[in-house]
Length: 246
Length: 246
DNA sequence: ACAATAAAAACGAACGTTCGTTCTATTTTT
DNA sequence: AAAAATAGAACGAACGTTCGTTTTTATTGT
Image 1 (tube, rainbow over the protein chains, first blue to last red):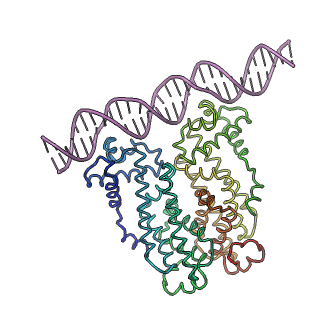
Image 2 (cartoon, rainbow over the protein chains, first blue to last red; image 1 turned 120 degrees about the vertical axis):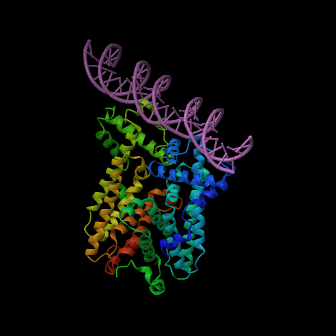
């Protein structure tokens, strides 16, 4: 799987997310018609991501948001009760979206090795396709209420748990070396995170997400794979290890 | 080298940094006597780190800072010209401190392999000893002026350059495999960064910086070291590779 | 040793601005 | 003409910053 293939399986525009936001918060917002709500939620989210990427959410004023979206203050407040709630809505929707996609990719294969590959790639590709959501979730977590912050932490632990499970299964089947799997998972996550936190760097160097994903996989497999698993590696997916210097 | 040894080579308290801040900005601040300035700069920095860790710098009001430091508003403004300048001072001082320490560790050994080990460890240990400075430098970079932001980026690139240099030297000597060294350096940095960005996670799991450093080294060496270098590895420093499952 | 005096530092109320939010009049859509 | 959505002026609270005053510290003269 490469990024192009991944994109096809996703509804690329954020329209579906906006629709879900509308349906979930329908009682708390003033706008009645779905079409209007979805259109303007998209406008609002895009503007928030744009402004926030440069200044942070706290530094973004409602007047900034008003002028970027070309909506009046009164119009904006038809879509959320307060600035704090707007933050909470974005954070929550981002998290559920991420969690949902990762879950589908977890239940896709049986072999631990290919399962690990798919999951690492899926996570990276998703963070590429929905970069603003990932960046926002990470950088603006501080401003959340304690309860919401708990959810952020539990998502971090949840995604690690999935990786740990795979690594343990793999070890039981003799495919992975005995390691501190939890820490390995942490390290995998740190490399995934770098992709969307330092995106400017990789853009500048013309590094594609496919290239990056293969590199990360190579690092992890060199570290985790047992000698038997390495033997097996070259034949089933020949194009996979294209990075290794020939 | 472990963390305890590293700490001894550093002046642990931030007093030296505060003194330098005083001397560098002496013309811009109202306070005349070094002793008073140093004492209160330390109080101010500690308070800023504490408040900022929870809310971010923008969300911190000068009244927050006033009550946390137990200094009046008027007193505070004797130490910096504006809130923005306070941010710039902390950022700049943090960067020069980091750069200075890393430079000394770069010129410490000849062999690329031990040089790489020392540098990775030094970076991790420094981020442990001066965690608030690292965290602040990363998280509050957004609020900087374009010129100051350029400095942040150039420090990121500088530290990567050092790693790339070592990896290239090592490859020339047949100690490292041919790789995309720049990307390897990026990945090393991402793991180092995780240590201070997600410190709460590692604290919760009782993972020491020594343990983490050895784990990172093992990941990188498995990925980079040539077969000859691996052969050599067990004899010169026997205690080094204690992580590998026996 | 001790007032008297000058210098340094701290204080905190007050200023103008900007913030998030509200509300009613108006426009647009159905 | 009824309902839905937008406009933008207005509000009090909170912001960063200033400044005249008070308190603390250091220096001087006797």
